[in-house]
Image (tube, rainbow, N blue to C red; front, side, top):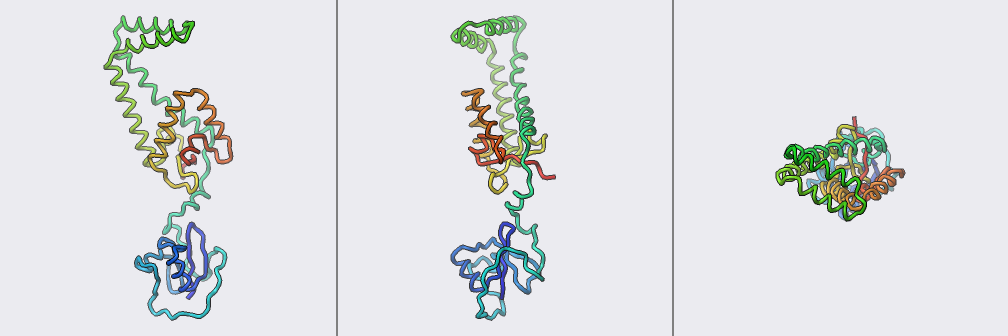
Length: 264
């Protein structure tokens, strides 16, 4: 009996039953790998053939003395065609996807940033006419401030001018936006901006979906904090990295992700 195996859209074999069982025992071959041999109409997972055991015992098989050497991965002849739909192959996906352009990524980022602007407009709904006048005066003084200490003092006065209710509404809006973005990123690897520009975040190696910790915590929250602390140096350095072959920004490298065009 000659058995062909397949993993990651590559095929290997033929192997004897004894070789396959030895590789199963040593975990060189996994129960999730596909297998095909004469008499089968389609590829099936080894675990389905062995019923979850680490040994394959087909009915009516008589051991053969020949032990053919493994050949390079290739499609076996006169067999059922390889069923791509039966195995979700990350490497096949990687070969078919196309990296998102820097321009498209920048546009998605701008859209996402614009979604935060309504938070800055919230205080205007809570200020009286007199407070509006004081706010304008403080802003003018901040523009003409001659020292950093003076600017910090004026900024503190501006913050104190904004009512507590306004701060609460701003916080609620920001939390809602963070929640929406986190949900979309975890579900499809797309923020609102990326969804509109038809690009998405995937694992840098196999182009699979990325977990919430990497796609949101590392790529988004960490870099929001870094940008607030080191603006604009982090932003500039971040996108300099995107000029590389894989177009990975600094936050992509940290999270081990890349951004690709959405499949049509």
